[in-house]
Each structure stands twice: as C-alpha cells, then as structure tokens.
Length: 189
Ligand SMILES: Cc1cc2nc3c(=O)[nH]c(=O)nc-3n(C[C@H](O)[C@H](O)[C@H](O)COP(=O)(O)O)c2cc1C
Image (cartoon, rainbow, N blue to C red):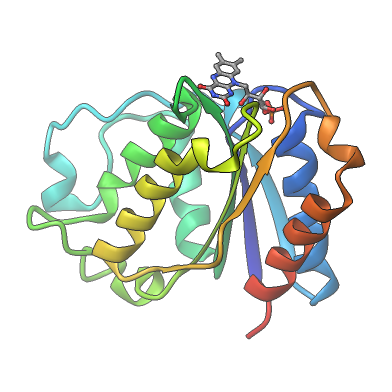
C-alpha cells in the first residue's frame, strides 16, 4: 500500500510536521510505502477556474501540482496534516486542495479515467490549532469531510490537536498515539 503524507504547515519541526511523521510511521509499521510532501516547498498556484480540465482532466498550470496529481492518483491513502490559520486551512493547503479540480468533469464527477483510482480513496486528516479547544479547527474538517462526501472518498476519523508553540506537541503522548494509530488504520487493507 502507498501512503502519501501532505504537510500543510510551512513550519518544519512544528506540530503538524511531528504528527504527520507519527502517522507515516504508523503506516510504515503496517508495511506501507510512505512519502511526505511539504507543500510550502512546492510551487502551487491557485485554481484559475478556466474549466479546461473539465474536458481534458489535465490542469493548464504547469507547476509542482502536476507531479502531485500523479502521486495522488497512485496513492492508496493520503494523510493531510494542517494547522489552523485564521479559522481556516493554510493557504498552501487551500491552493493544493483547489487544484484537485483537475480530477473532475464539468458535473463534478470524477473523470472516467480517474474514477477507479479515486473512488473510495482513503483520506486522513490531522488538524492543529493554538486554541485550547480542538474544535476551533472544525472549518478544516468541514472542508475535507464535504469533499470526501461529494466525491465518494473515505475520510478516516480525524485527529484534532491543540498546540501553539513550535514542536509543543512532542510532549503530547495522546496526540502522537492518535496520529500513529491513524497511520496504522489507514494502511490496514
Ligand atoms: C498566521 C497564523 C494564523 C493563526 N490562526 C489561528 C487561529 O485562527 N486559531 C488558532 O487556534 N490558532 C491559530 N494559529 C496558531 C497555529 O494554529 C498553531 O501555532 C499551530 O500549532 C501551528 O501548527 P504548526 O506548528 O504545525 O505550524 C495561527 C498561527 C499563524 C502563524
């Protein structure tokens, strides 16, 4: 099984980063081949809504998202780890998610060629927010949940963590365990 990790935080060694590593370690323990993509190190422009992909299934913007599209198609599971910025996902994550547009036709159905790879795709999500209430990050969950619901992907139970300072989550054994377990579960056939 191939598990792709998507880091939505630009802060290396930060909380989302540490938790994503835990999740990928859990997946690795189950024998999955894992790969981590750090969105902030990629050049990913926002969707232009040019609708060309509705016909072709290919995005006209020739940036790093083209390679990521291929990795998404090949992955059996994708785990996202995303901090909350101003009650929303980070701009890096939003640009990445909007570019999923290329997988859909004009009626928001998967392009036929992608359907077998995308239907039922396993999606993982870890959210981190500075607020002590982990549910402050629910807008991120909403976005991923609705995306999975409308397109027939499988969202695994979301791991939601509160942490503010860089790497603070390293001392949060419960959060690390939950992230590890998410990785294990998502990589279990
Ligand atoms: C630009 C910016 C906006 C933020 N907005 C929020 C917010 O709206 N609510 C919140 O609880 N935390 C907010 N935070 C705090 C981060 O979510 C928190 O520090 C988190 O641990 C960062 O995760 P990271 O270490 O993975 O980068 C914000 C941080 C930054 C840098």
